Image (cartoon, rainbow, N blue to C red; front, side):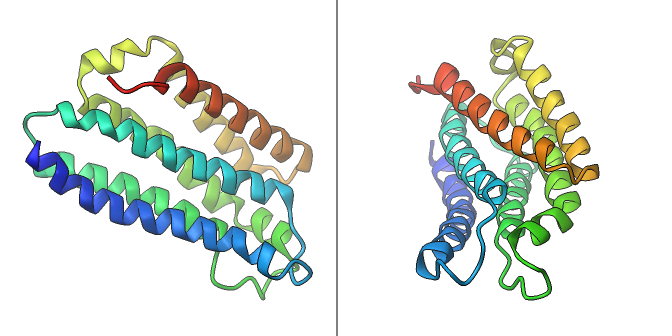
Length: 189
């Protein structure tokens, strides 16, 4: 238990930075509503990332059941949370002066954003296995199909500038993510 609390502190620091990045980025639109034109797909992904971070924190509570920790497991989790932080910094960079606005920025950085997001869903397999094979198997076939579907959709999103695709992807992703969390993680054991 003490090991987990020690590990959780560093995870919490990086996760806190990621959440701060999102909240500060979203606050820009409230603080200066006329300065930058909002691109709702971009905002949708910011909300999706916030949900993913909250889900990550809730999911990681399961790590309390691990009795032995290795540095490899610890390093793996740090890499995972750093990758999540990188996604947040891609959503809200310090400056978008080189772009015509948030839509131009988001579409021009979609390769990086969705490439890293695809990586998140691959990394997630390892994170789930760290909690044990029994835990992984408890999700049934939906879990691997879910992660593989996200990887495929992210690979498509990297390639296409279609606003219809991006609008649909962010809406479906957020709705599915909320459904997944509610169905599986309403209560912690």
